[in-house]
Length: 105
Image 1 (cartoon, rainbow, N blue to C red):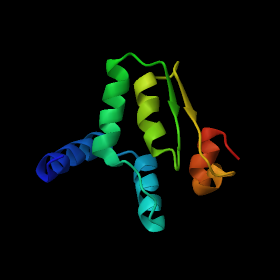
Image 2: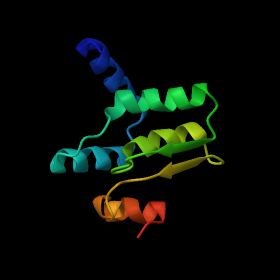
Image 3: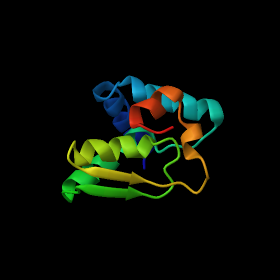
């Protein structure tokens, strides 16, 4: 993607979605050098899932759950996002606040 287009989409997503959980996950990923898709791609994931009317999404390699946030917006409160990860304890990567919100231990 062209850098100018990506910058524009990222800024647009930042203005529209300045939620504390996103800011927290982005800061944590940056602090630990953990790759996340970023807001422009996250917004695209949400729109793509909405475009096909997804009610369920299965994410392979969930990491911090950053992409899952965007998928959850797409499927809505009655939808389902199933997250997987190859590591034995992926919830340890989440912040305690995020883990408690998601019901994980």
